[in-house]
Image: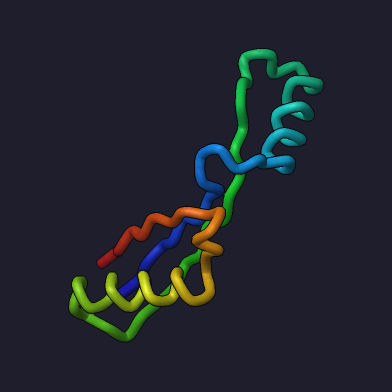
Length: 80
């Protein structure tokens, strides 16, 4: 089973990288760009075939390593 994990900063946490991206886009002439938040995408392939077990295992991975849950949130997307 394949999974994709999206990790982004929680609302209210300053995102200097996102701010720099937004500023650069504005300077390149993309005036309609407002706030920009950046994050990371992690693709993982699991041997697990049960979706419930896979999601639980991925949540443990996120809590232990993939996301700093003090300042980041994560979303898990399972793919068949």
